[in-house]
Length: 109
Image (tube, rainbow, N blue to C red; front, top):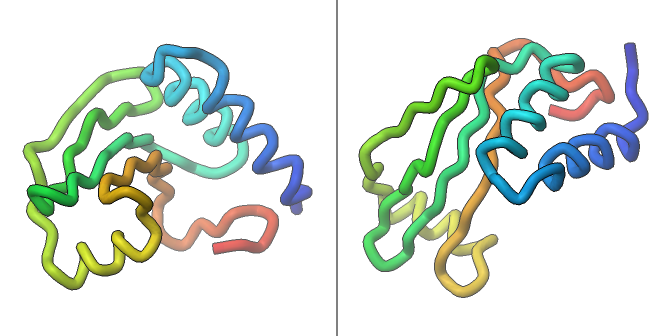
């Protein structure tokens, strides 16, 4: 089944913005995405430029079980790559974990 790319990103955005509680919104997003792709987890992390560490705020599975990781030191090369897209030094992102070999249904990777 091929999805409309606009509709896909619109619906994902609505789920991310569905609650002021970021963990609840992330779980809503993950549950919605699981109806489209075989996602297993969603993670929220922040890159701290001053310490060159990636700080995992949380990792949620589809049941809402919360996990975390210790700070992850980043290589100079990784820091340079992150700084190309970060504005102001710090950078936060939400990541959907999809098993290898499962492309998004609208043809993107």
